[in-house]
Length: 201
Image 1 (cartoon, rainbow, N blue to C red):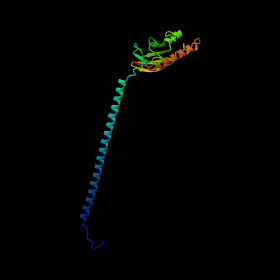
Image 2 (image 1 turned 120 degrees about the horizontal axis):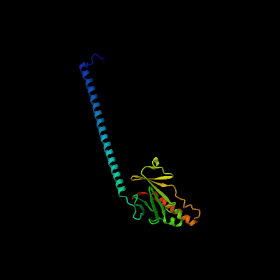
Image 3 (image 1 turned 90 degrees about the vertical axis):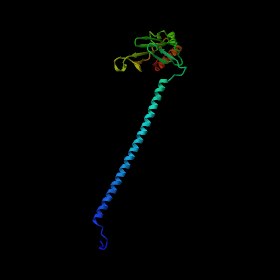
Image 4 (image 1 turned 45 degrees about the vertical axis):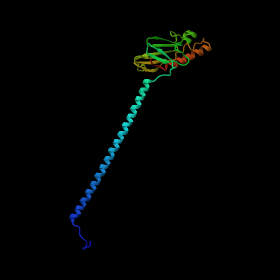
């Protein structure tokens, strides 16, 4: 070092370092505050978006509930009603409520048609109906009520409803003509389709 160069007092060097340190600390503090502010703003924005989404979902659910409550079938929709059980079925286009005949025996609903009964006495409700719907207080699949060869239609209110396997004995009668067989088969199919539209009355 040049002997003629002015010397900086040690006290000033020490103060300079402290000032630099303070400046660095202040800058770090400002940076941390800025990060914290950004985080809070981002968090508030996220909460706002979440609240908006929740409001939209609530509104959508309310719309669905209202639709389900006020849902109506077309005015031309026809039903076959079973008042004893408080249920009904949508009638297919080729059947009227007077075409369908029914009988309840305990937890069974026997179904046939006037045409089937007239064409083949064996298709009457007492002998071999076109279909049988079962009603059970507990789930048949649980084993509490064992039902052979049935399909679960669903649960309505306090009851489970099932459809028995094809009640086609009278449809397959060997002594029936082709035209009779065709009519019986069509009615059997229509009754089967009707059953799957089960709903509360």
